[in-house]
Length: 137
View 1 (spheres, rainbow, N blue to C red):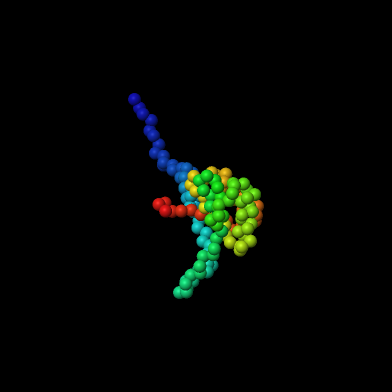
View 2 (cartoon, helix red, strand yellow; view 1 turned 60 degrees about the vertical axis):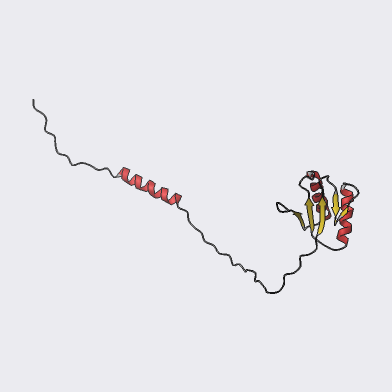
C-alpha cells in the first residue's frame, strides 16, 4: 500500500483575527478609561477674628404642641385657626423683623405644622426654619 507523499507546506498564520482582537481591546480600554477634567474654583475662605462673636439675632418662636395648639413668642393662641395665627404673627412681626422658627412637638398633628408654614408663606416671611432638639434633651 502506497501512501501519498504529503507536500510540505509552510503553515499560514492569519493575522486578521489577531488585529481584530487588538482593536477590540483598544476600544474597550478607551471606553472604560475615565478622563479627569480638573477645574478649579477660586474660593475666598473666611478669616477668624479674635473679637467676640456677634450675638445671635432674636427669633420669632412659633411653638406647635402635641394637641396642635399654637404659641407665638410664649403666648398661647385662643384657637387653632389660620386667621388667628396670621394675626398673631402680624403683631409679632410689627415689633421687628425677625426670622421665624417653628418648633413642633414630635406628636403634633402634621396639618398644624403645614398650616403654620402656609400662613408664613402667605405673609411673605422668607426666613423660616424648623427648630429641632437633640436626642435626650
